[in-house]
Image 1: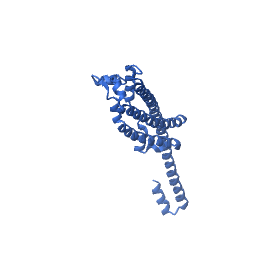
Image 2: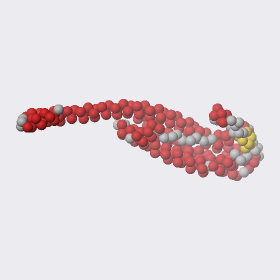
Image 3: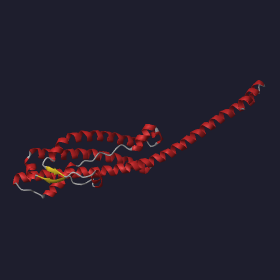
Image 4: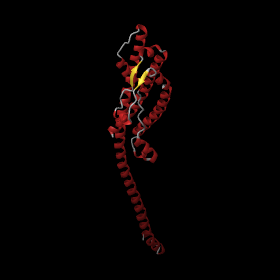
Amino acid sequence: MILRRIIAHFRKQEWTAIALDFVIVVVGVFVGLQAQAWNESRQDRVHERMYIERLARDFTAIEERTEFANEKWLSVINVSRRLLADIDAFNATGRMPRTEQEILADLNDLQGTRIPAPRAATFVEMLSTGEIRVLRDEDLRDALLAYDTQTHYTLIAYDVLVNRAREATVAAGAYADVDLPDTLENIYDNPNREFYRAIDFPAFARDPRSRAAVSLLGATAVNQGGLSTAQRESARRVLEILEAE
């Protein structure tokens, strides 16, 4: 319609009318582009709010998991100290320093582990879809990337430390009798159940491999705890920024 009018004005050499039609076209295109940009911006803000809420849920769960893991690693460190003291006390006096049940409880805790918290699912999705662009806060993007990098490193280190401690785990339980569960449901319903039901502590204490194994597992827990703490602090930084959004 506009083009037909311009052609008609051009044939009649109506330059003023042509100029007005040209201005109308330019203004119309500009207004259309502005409206489209405004609509895209509005959609981005809706998506940004949705992602912020999802990220907050993800990192709340991550923080809780890392806190739980930290408690576990601290427990393993304390357990290793007690068992080392038990070994030294027995070798010095020839007497059981504590009851068998107390030692078994610590041996069970010593063997436990906690897989590190995972990457944030929402952040992974945003990276894969390119939606990370809707987050306007540069500090938030940096904090998310820092957590993701720390988690990648932590998961790799976890595999390395688990492999390094594999022989020590076997050695630590070499003189204990294992109480295996009857069903998988028994494991699911009792995730903290004790697997060791008896131990030949004199043989355990006299074997130098036992002390080396307990020491290594304690040192591994220190390393795991440090990694878990770094992961928790990265998650907390993300949460601090999200709470301010």
